[in-house]
Length: 282
Image 1: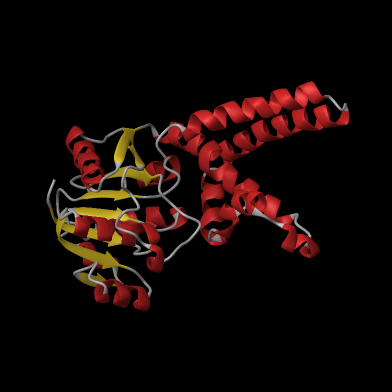
Image 2: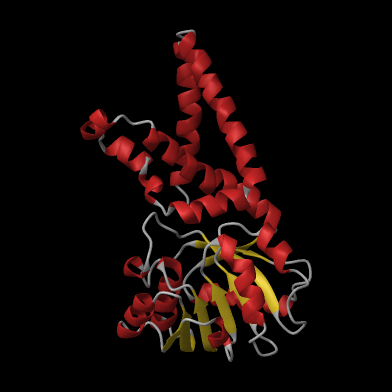
């Protein structure tokens, strides 16, 4: 699907990668970036990933598709503000890690001729910023598309085709199911990574090797971005945290009792699932 004008709000790791992929695959005739950082705008123009770069949301005027690649606590307000500048038929989407709250808060607040459908590329990184953007970030990766209750088949088809044209795989999923799943597969791992990093005593820093460093890699993510995600998905994250606490209690009981068989059984369960995941595409 060839797009005349693609507008990207927030030209960081995800937004910049989308721009690079769209340019490389000739998905859009014209790419406009909206970002409040002057240096980001300058760099994006200098490196040829954007045709235009602006600080104001009014620059989305004339776009066929507008993607909001900003923190989840900013997306709703930006979508509503930008929609006032969009022409009829413009499709809006996002890349946020939570979906239900955004879809709920946007519902009924857009012009009747403008549609918003949620998206979430499962292709992030603990690194951030335009310097880490890559044209290959989305290739073969899964993008969850979460339509609202009033979404049209045409809009859903357009956004799914867009992600596929960038090289991604697409799965359509309800917003609440998405948030419940991501609480366990994405948000809880980040919380756990941060908690593990925090309890490391300073004098043991030099004793960390591959295991600890790999397990705590996610803790390098932007705290402001992740705290917003945690708040947005509070209920489901608390549920996932409860499941983890139950599993930790099982390990504690086995350790307290010196029960080798129980420990091996728990470890075997984890190994089986991790091995199965490793055989599937990321």
